[in-house]
Image 1 (cartoon, rainbow, N blue to C red):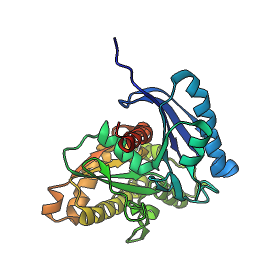
Image 2: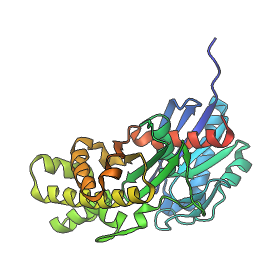
Image 3: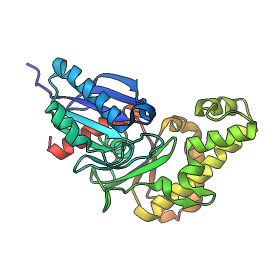
Length: 301
């Protein structure tokens, strides 16, 4: 007779979409879907109401044992509160007591963690398993975020805001303003006279395959800035493994040798030789899987 496995509903909240799924306690995805967040019109509380609707619906089918959330923002994961979120992405999100609201409305235990922290936990648990005691993940997308894990546990910092590496200053400006996918595509749009948000990372690499020198230069500039930021993180934390995630990092064969060369330029051998650069494996599922791992850690499951 098969052993009964508890079921959890997991959410990954972003500014434009919310990914959600039903996972068993082993991290296997039984069902997944997504919905528009409509964040700018419904605000933070509207997003929580969307989650509650889904929880109520799936509770009937799966007898849920918990709600696990990965979310944009700086998050007090001990108390389930959004400490700070970008107002232009999710208005009215900062200060929301997400855990308290959901538990009161659904009577199901709920835990919430920052999206990059969640992705890191997910990768370490099921994706890019690492032998090192000290592992960092850097997520590169619209912005840049990072997390640090020691022996599988998050290092969250004194005010639970550790990992905001995108806000550090490197040559050219803030790290995420010069090295993110959004920064790279925005720069290209200006150079080519295109409307904002009309060029995607996929389009850039299609142009690179055609030998487009402007596209090649844009990604080379991004790689240089990434190498500086990653090297800075390595100098500060000295992780044994750095996992790189975000949609554009699917281009591993292009980024890996070029990033490796520039990181080697910035790091002394003692750090460079002791640092493995890996690329995320869970892709868009990392946030949900990591949200569940965070729930399991808190509840000792």
